Length: 117
Image 1 (cartoon, rainbow, N blue to C red):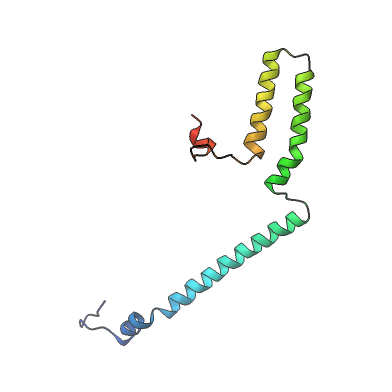
Image 2 (tube, rainbow, N blue to C red):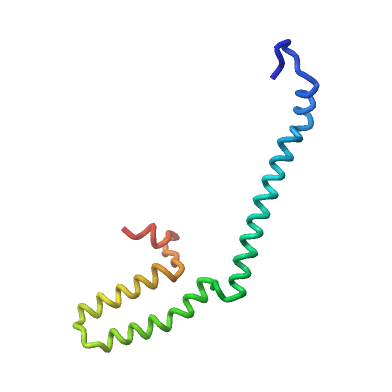
């Protein structure tokens, strides 16, 4: 914006041609800091995964599936009535699916959450 004399200062003209160096340095420093934070968090997660503290979803599912199968076999061979067996199996599957499995895409391209009433 022009000054009170309705003229642009040399500084204004320089900024319009070259940009605001201070603001650009601040923005660059901010971006570098954010990038460093992301890199640090990624490195920490990679370290935890290498140490076996964290595992990916596929590995978790691979490890938990045998337990779910065994629990299902125990329920089916129990002396519970059929209604209770069905309720228990449904609860086990729902808990496993909700907490551990990746949502499968629906045939129409929507996720299960979008198609569930």
